[in-house]
Image (cartoon, rainbow, N blue to C red; front, side, top):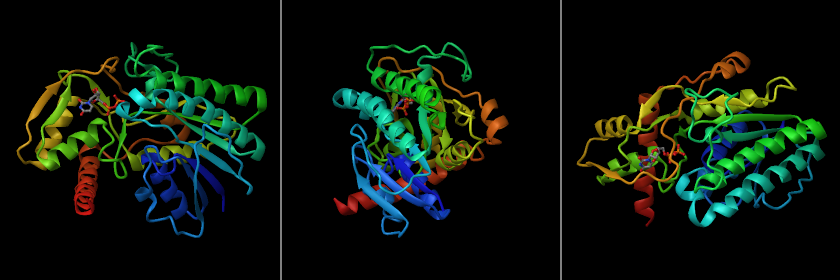
Length: 320
Ligand code: UDP
């Protein structure tokens, strides 16, 4: 049995990871400040004897008495509406101070530490699809910079702790991911479109909807995280993890409307500043080194996600 710390453990990715790790017989310590994480995401495991929740902000150092084997650093608001505006400075602090604090913890425990970096390190990509060797095209002071540059700085810290301190690091770059345990209020495109269609509200496309994204179902992504964490020592990445199926945002809206039906109509709103026009991972490295590729196509993943949100929204309106 391994003892595994998951930061951001009540969030979308973190909670899915905690559930999988508990089900596989590990001891899991879940750390979150619950800024975007939700205790309801860990309802099924919160009383499990191998599970412990600690309310803590990783911007501050963390001491853990028991020995840690592995640390997954998933803590950070990931939705543009959640990290822009009032939480921008906090987002940079989470990325940078959080990385330092967790790397120090990994060093003390001799633990392997995995960083959930992001496709946002590529910014508005001039290379398509994106390969890991592409250095990106990021606006250093725009409204997305807190997240993009925060995550870039975190990558730099991870590699410096590996080179200078010998910490066993793993870095993955996650592309757009969706699925159960997303917050209906999250603000990202899959949750917005599904919740809008379920409620019969207008579907809000930002810009003309010609921008593209590649959507990975969460179970596929969690599998990639676990494979990366347990890959041979010295294999640091960064490794792109995402589903190479590429769709325009208009195609996504049409798919969601076709699946859910109802009276929602598509409306067009302003495109947020610095919104990338295209994104698709080249996953050759993940295929070769981790023997991983996504198995769940968008149609199947959307069906599962629609069922989740239908329950979630219903539950919420009953509670309200
Ligand atoms: N988007 C949209 N309508 C929404 C939410 C997002 O058209 O209600 C667009 C957004 O402008 C972007 C794409 O969908 O072009 C993906 O946005 P998301 O916030 O999900 O992720 P990210 O921009 O971080 O890839």
